[in-house]
Image (cartoon, rainbow, N blue to C red; front, side, top):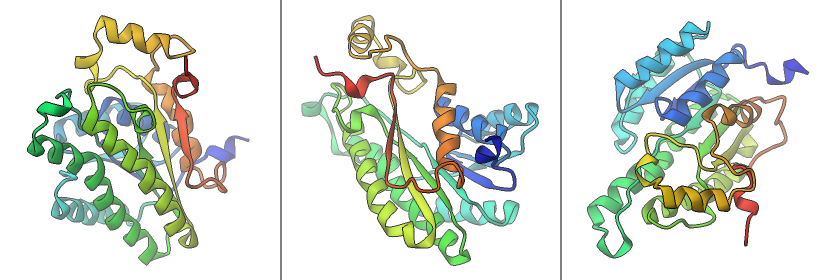
Length: 256
């Protein structure tokens, strides 16, 4: 059964792989044999994740790119191809958030978040999927969504809208790329304390989250590794595409 999850010989490109959740997902892929290209705006953070992967015996390299800039994504695609030749796994985990109330939201801030969370994923998927298709490479694209994509959360309007778009794009691309042997799925993480959301996890909000999470706890970043490796494996999830996989402690099942 272990062979089902063997990613030896495959290269994974991870946008946002230098974030708390992205890094954990990358380490899971590396532990199962994949070579990892860590892409982030902050090269220093990306290099730190590379060091951690290498310390565990994995192979990785850091790259810098701003996903809101198409020329950056084109450039990093060239660099990764020079490093690895090809790539079979694409993990899209870039993210930006804000707590600005809806009626106070300025369009510059709205555009900035959408450029990273949604437009950025459109650009990444266009550029990287085309290169996979042109080479006849079969593989897996994993988009990272959020529980706020299906149940809009207070205080994160633009983030919720952008992640709802990620879900729709995931299912559209699953249909679009299936003839080319490329599967497209999304992981919907629940509440995982990370650098991005700590500022809104007040004592009151945390109590509310726990009341709506049947498992009554936050997730640990490493708990995303199983779903990530499963979706990356063309053996374990060979007939899975267009799926929105919840890893949320039951949050999405809770009503009252």
